[in-house]
Each structure stands twice: as C-alpha cells, then as structure tokens.
Image 1: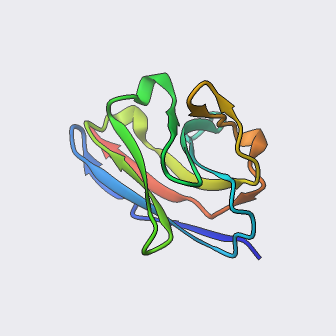
Image 2: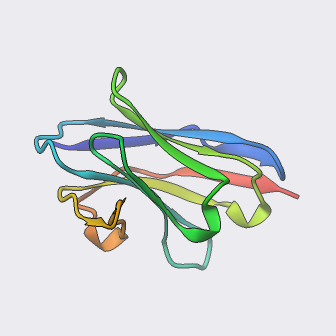
Length: 129
C-alpha cells in the first residue's frame, strides 16, 4: 500500500520559515507526481506545488513562487516543502499526495488535487501576525 505522512508543521511568526516533509512508502510506479496542497479553514483545498518523480521538475502556484520550494530526498524517500517569508494567510493544513501519472505542461508537471491517487494525513501550519 502507498503511504504518505506529512510532518513538520507548527506555529511560526510571520516572516519566518518552516520545512515540511512528506515520507512516502509503497510506491510501485517509477513515473509519478508528488504534490503539496493546503486547506485553510472555510476554504477549498488549493495547490501549493508538485515535483516530478525524478525530482528534476517542479510547478508552483503563482502566489507561492519564490517563497516556497519543493525538493526530493532520495536517501530518505521524502519530499520536502521549504516555506519562507510566511504570512498569516499561509495558515492551513498542508497535505501531500501522489499522482500515479506524470504529465507536463511545458516543463512543469501537471499539479491538481483531482489528479492525486493517494493522500497522507495533513500537518497544521499556523502563522501568527
């Protein structure tokens, strides 16, 4: 079974940084997309960004480009989300997911929560003003 576990959430002041990790196990397809998504209270889940299975290609929500960065750690089989210059509006539960397809739009992997086949439990990020 595919299992994902997000961790690293917490309370941080505005302007601070936080690094989330998604530990993944049980993947059986070499080509896939791993995504980060978030859901704030009273709002729909939205895309943060995705990374291709080889770790070479990423895509981000426009509002997060330059502040958020996704990377893959092969040694630990984890995908990290590095967040900087955090704002109170970044407060949300952050989830990681796996899409068992890998399709591109240009050089960016397609990233949509409707494409995810597996989800991990989320981790809460709270940014105080």
